[in-house]
Length: 108
Length: 111
Image 1 (cartoon, rainbow over the protein chains, first blue to last red):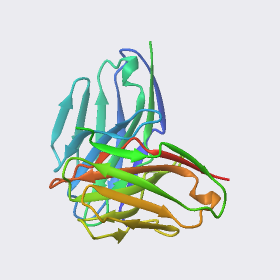
Image 2 (image 1 turned 135 degrees about the vertical axis):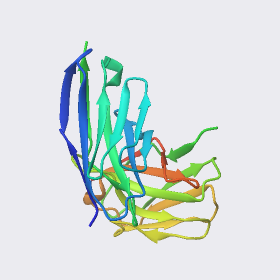
Image 3 (image 1 turned 180 degrees about the vertical axis):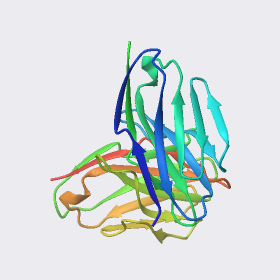
Image 4 (image 1 turned 90 degrees about the vertical axis):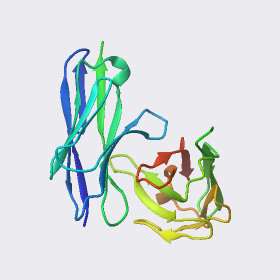
């Protein structure tokens, strides 16, 4: 069965303190790995799609990378407005599977 | 371009009552999905549709029914609500690629 595990569950950073969020997965026939941002009381907002190991995508302070077993979301010099829950999801042969998310808090 | 919209935003039901959640999208997407999100758990797929007139079961379909009579709308019904169905419900849609686009959610409480 496809599985997606995100770590840590919660992460508190000081403004400007770079870090990474992890998404490990076990699937057969990966078709895509997705990162979403979710603000409190809102729906997930699409960030990135990664299709194959070695691929990288960037958007502002965020950079997503992919290996055969995991993906990282690197946050460089975060700002308080980057505070949110970040969701990882994988699409294989079946339904899209989501991780439980990492709740990121960036203190000024 | 409103994207994906959901009504209502909030609802409180008593055990045994029924209700319908409406999802609408204006992106001409073929695929539509209903998820539920519970604390500490990832989004879980309830039902989905690959086109007008089609529906299929997801991971957690029991207690829910769906209909896709028009391409732009996807309805989720609860025939007899139970406290275990207290959750936040999200609708999503996608076109030819795999990225799904989500609505703002419906927060449902069943007493």
